[in-house]
Length: 320
Image 1 (tube, helix red, strand yellow):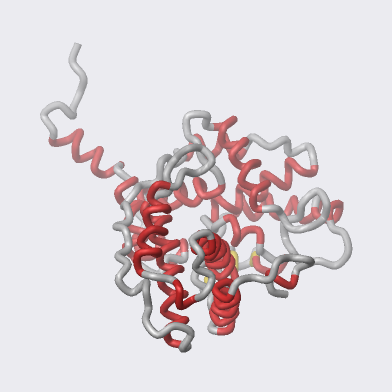
Image 2: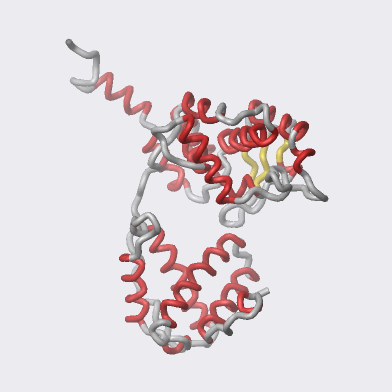
């Protein structure tokens, strides 16, 4: 069902209808549903921005209007008052450029007004914080496993930490996606629409077994093959999961703010510090490019710290 068909809403502008057709085209050409959902959100904002400037027709949109939109993104503030990162700005501009390129190729406009828009240079940021092995254990021991939901939360975080999968990938797990005999998790249509297998350790598998035996039968309502269930028997809500994991991290490692993704960052960093080959870590994380995984080599400084201690004049033993 398209957006303008959901109840009594104002019929969208010609530009809005073109955006809907573009999103359908993306889906029909194999783009992941999460990618299309993000594009929808960003294009809705763009269409609204242009409508406020009396640009409801595709042919009415100019290069200067899109430059104005780019400046709007640069000055935009999030709810916490922070600006959008250049990476986030670039993602929204990429969506706009793709949309206008599509309209040009399909004859909706003669010339592409977005072709001259230059993407902002994305920052190369490191993860703000990662957990040490001791901190991770402290966080994982946070849930009250004498309760059904506490045991479920422990199993959820053990899977996040052991397999380093993303939040959305965990929520989408089915009962048969965890292979106990092989020690693997099957990630179906992860980021970029790619399937992959990732390893999972015995400790996490043990907690999953306990959840499946003691908790899930009490939560399940009707017929569902979703692995991790909410208190109401449905799939876990992404925002709820983030808030819940954030609370456990705040309690177990109060100096390390983070949420679900922190387990992913921490697992990758600790594996590299333990001597893992970056190519295998990239495969585990589902990274299409090795450069994406290389960021964790800059977080993992254990070897550099050892060299510093051995060779720097001030890096050795302390003096009184």
